[in-house]
Image (cartoon, rainbow, N blue to C red; front, side):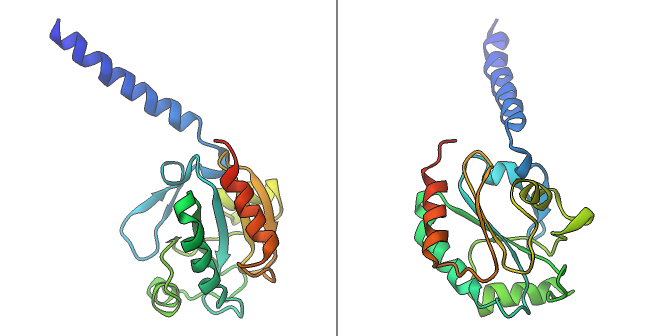
Length: 183
């Protein structure tokens, strides 16, 4: 009799986990290796239901100083739930082959505290799922530091070119719209 009462909450908890996974938007399905860590980022677990700014980055791109602005944006809005995800890529031939060097540029040179992945393909048929879905909902990045603002349901609210700085009023407005969105 006691076993039945213990089993019911365990069963309900397990079923709740399955429902959450099924509710994960296509954008967030999958895992990516975290930069300079021995763990993967489960995109759904970490980002589902949260507003996001996704940026494809490159350490040796002329736009790399935008890391400072992205970090400032992260600091400004993280208390309101914004998650910034940086995805380094060598698709435009401006990223190091060495993850330690990429990490140094991000963490040491620019003081990045937001989540960064190991370098990934972000364009074409080799693109990771995250960027395939971003391209379906908006368009593929045309260069490094292309920015996608994503609402709490995993839908692109707006996308911005490399030329758009992280403190641009239109980008800030899109971030605020994503923060205000309902899960």
